[in-house]
Each structure stands twice: as structure tokens, then as C-alpha cells.
Image 1 (cartoon, rainbow, N blue to C red):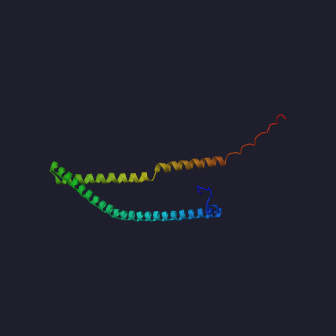
Image 2 (image 1 turned 45 degrees about the vertical axis):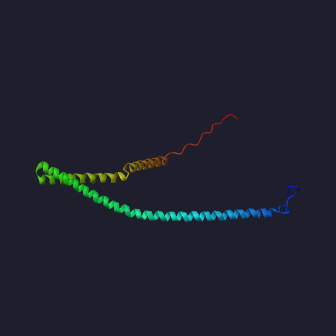
Image 3 (image 1 turned 90 degrees about the vertical axis):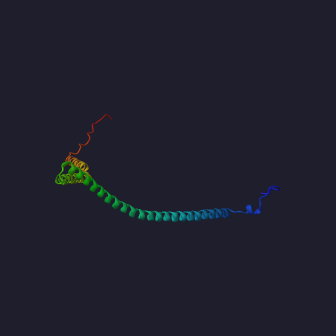
Length: 165
């Protein structure tokens, strides 16, 4: 619009609704192309992140395995040292190496039996005996209810009493 004359330019006056729709469609297509490019960049970044995480995981698995082996070896050597110290203490206190070795064997047998019983109890509890008993009780109750409803007499039809008209 001209400030002096108040007239609109001819190009703006001749713009049709079709031109406006084409302009909006072009803007929507440009936005769609930008969105697709953005999604492609995000997908590439996520793929690179997953690849990096896989490399870290691969390195970590080996490290955890080696640490587990070292932990087991150190635990066994610690157990051997403790047993040797206990055996030495018993041998010094009783002046009999045979009594010390015998008592160590008895202690180890008691530990093995206790661990064996603990493992059996853990396996038994892992089978959910209380839940199984409850399910069996619910099943028996359901069968009893079904049998009772199967043998039930049908309800008598409702009585219609003559009433005032």
C-alpha cells in the first residue's frame, strides 16, 4: 500500500486463492523436508550412540568376567588362610596335629551339610509351595461351586396374583 496514494500494488491485488494455497503447500513441504532431515539426524545419532554403548558393553563383559575369576581365586586363598590359621590355633592349643585336622574336617562337613540344606530350602521356596497350595484350594472350591450350581433346582416362576383393576 502506498503511503501517499493509499493504493495497493498491482501484484498484491492480483494474488489469487490458488497462489495462496500453493504458497502454503510449498511452506508445508519445506517444513516436511526439514522434519525428515531432522529425523534422519536423530536416527543417525541414536545409531552411533547404540554402537558406542555396544562397544562399552563388550569391553565391560570381559572385565567383569576377569574380575569374577580374580574374586573367586582370592576368596579361595582367603578361605585356605583362615582354615590354616584355625588349624594352627587348634594344634597349638591341643598339642595334637591329628586333633586339629580332625576338628577342621568336622567343621567342614558341618558347613557342607548346612549349605546343602540351605540350598535345598531355597530351591523348595523358589517353587512357591504356598502359592501352589492356595491355587489347589481355589481349584477345589471352584469345582465344588460348579457341582453345586449344576445340581441346583431351577427357580420357580414368579407367582402372579390377581390384583385390582
